[in-house]
Length: 329
Length: 65
Image (cartoon, each protein chain N blue to C red):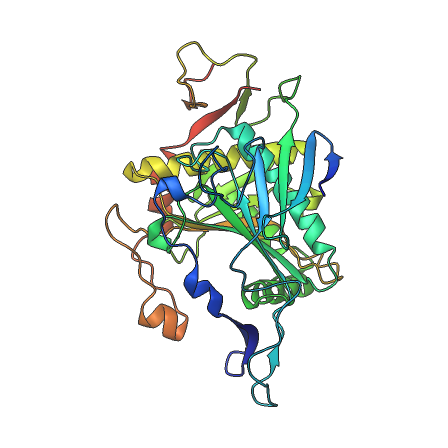
C-alpha cells in the first residue's frame, strides 16, 4: 500500500508506504544486498562488480513511476493522491566496509558527477517537481544497511522544507534585490568565526542559526542554482570540500560519524528560481561522543530547536581538524 | 537488454534488475590522464608522498608538499 495523504493542519503531503515495514534490516555483511553478487553467493541487488558507482530503483519505494491505486478514497477534507515519483539507491562503492569519508577524493568526484547525471535525468520526468539527493549515515539515524550508499527521492511536488527556503529567499530577493544565500555567505566570510574550511568554489561553515551542535552547511561561492550549473572545476572543489568535512567529522570523536546529508537545489517544476542557491546541509545527531541530540517536545511539537552549544565553538573544533586534500589521479 | 551511454569520462550502462521491473545503472569512469589543476584548498600531485598510507589522501594543513 502506498499513497499520498494530505495533512490539512500543516498543508503538506504524507506518504504511506506499508511495504517498507518489511525492508531488510541490518543484515550480516555476508548477506548485504548492496554488495556485488559473489560467485556462488546469494544474489544481491547488484549482479556485477565492474563499476565505480551503481544506482538502482529502491526495492521498497515510497514513491514510484507506476504507483498503485490508493488503498483509501480521499475527500474534500482529506485529499489522497497516487504516490508518483522515483526512489533510487546510490551505491558509493563496491567495498562494503567503506564510507564516503574513507573513499578517496577521486571517488567523491565521481559521485558528484553521478549526482549531476541523476539530477538531470530525474528532473526531466514529467511527474517530477523536485529531486532530493541525500544520505542517512549510521545506526543513530536509523540506517538499515551499512554498505556505503545514499538515496534520491524524486517528488511529485516541492517538499515543504524547500518551499519554506524558497519563500524566504524570494522575500529577501524582492526586498533587497540580492540572493539571501549570497548575503549569508558574505556575512559568514566577513565574520569568519563560523567558517570551517573553504576552497576556490565552496565554503563550509556552521551557520549562525545552527539547530544541531554540528550542523554544517556547504555553499557554492558562485551563485549556482543546481548541480547542473557546476563547471568540472567546481565539481572537483565540491568533492574536495566534502572530503575535508567528512574526515573532520570522523576525527571529532574518533568514530565513523553519523549524519544526515541533504542537497538543496532549485525545484524541477519548470520555474527559473533565480533567487535560490545550491547548498548542502549536514545534520549530525551527536552532541558529544556518546550523547544524541533528540528531537523532543519543543523541536517536534512546536518546531523550535534548542541548541545546547554555540556555533562559533563547534566551528573552531571542526576547523582544527581540517586537513588538505591531495589528488592522486 | 543493456543500454550504454557515454557522458564525458563517465560511462553509463543501464540494465533491468533480476525482478525484470526495476532499472540498475552501472557508472564507470575512465582514468584521467592528467591530474587536475591545483585550486585553493587542493594540492594536485602526480604521485602521492612516499610516506602516505594506502587509502589516505590527506595531510595536515601546513604539512603539505
